[in-house]
Image (spheres, rainbow, N blue to C red):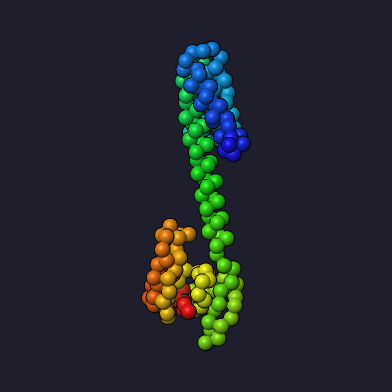
Length: 188
């Protein structure tokens, strides 16, 4: 399984497995093994918090786990660190997926647009466009910027942004994407 190659995921899984075995009381060292697996990344984040002179949840979780071990409750410390490790792992996985989705959207964005100035068309980099420019979007090409349709009509595939499976009809006066500026545009 590809996920288990990630050290944080692997240590979280091992922490959880050791925690389950520690609940059965098979051996008194098993809760400490779970604590060791669960504290690996927590100790690093707690150390960073100490260096920045901040008291945050990372530091508090490590202190609570140390306290549980000191008072003779290693199973409680293991459970606490497993839950903390699980939440941190899920957050990391979610952020990785979000980052991947955003990178995919960025790759869909064209790097050039057809700007129309006084009836003359010129191909320019998207970064050269300014609010108020008129662009032409040929059929079957991606829309390079947010804007409002000024002429023509077409169906626009917005699935990358909205998840809609069918193209959305756009005509003069409607936005090509959720408009965040006052771009004007023209479709063919």
